Image (cartoon, rainbow, N blue to C red):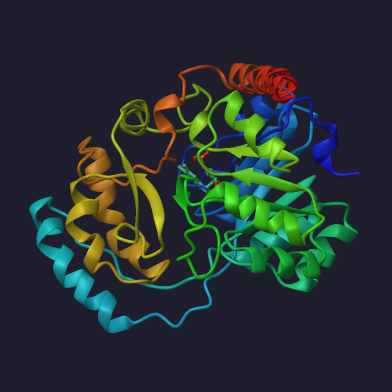
Length: 349
Ligand SMILES: Cc1cc2nc3c(=O)[nH]c(=O)nc-3n(C[C@H](O)[C@H](O)[C@H](O)COP(=O)(O)O)c2cc1C
């Protein structure tokens, strides 16, 4: 039986690396009857182990941990060097040096080993598909395995690997594209229907879902649950910066870009994005390491024209509410929207 069938509300808090996902947020969502998630990307293994312990101390409800898969490599070094030359004057102006554009595996083997040694209820993967050995090893220990896909063929491949559920991420989503390569542009609804047509696994729909009626829409389209990220960014339990919270509350449009990290991600369209988007190369995590000091300085200075401010397309609907209230209000809103749709359907004759 999937963890999904034990939830009181069909709501998963999306893992959000870089600060927003805290143990307090994950625990509050799980305790309220949704499924909370920790983001293991961009932290060290010791911090992951401590975060898992803190969620367990706060709730005995199930929760998940999300792992970044290492990039397969093969980046264009010359293009990354050219991008570094382009950004250098901006870094100098701000009094910082750009970082070294190094690769890396985000300590994936070590984090996976930690989750095998001390299993959690759910592990989800992003940035490609895990290998068969990792899927089998986690499942043997009682951990449910979810894979993130951005194209229909990846869902079929994930099912062949033996995963338990598929996170279907549409292009409306905030943050990085979860598939590899990162250039899929399927909107959530067509992707969900295409995946459902070829895959019997429970589907978790992600991308641009902030309120109850949107959850109702994906449930009607075949999803078992909805994964919401941006909807939780303004919660007091989230680790989002004040600048990020203000950006989410604004009506500014979002765009997809490689300019901040070398992998396409959706964030508020600001000056940095507009200036560098067309010139930005593919290369994650190299470009992430390159821009990191500049973006950190922009955050320190409270400069929203330069900082990366990830958000999904429906971000103006996100509310400043405790996470438990987001879960219960969005859950109730989904039920009400489904009932209203059934009521309207009776008039079709
Ligand atoms: C700030 C932020 C950070 C994110 N970090 C991760 C992550 O670490 N792992 C992951 O699988 N997805 C990550 N995502 C994507 C979410 O899992 C999810 O697909 C997305 O939030 C759904 O769209 P929405 O933000 O419109 O709800 C992130 C999204 C945001 C907004």
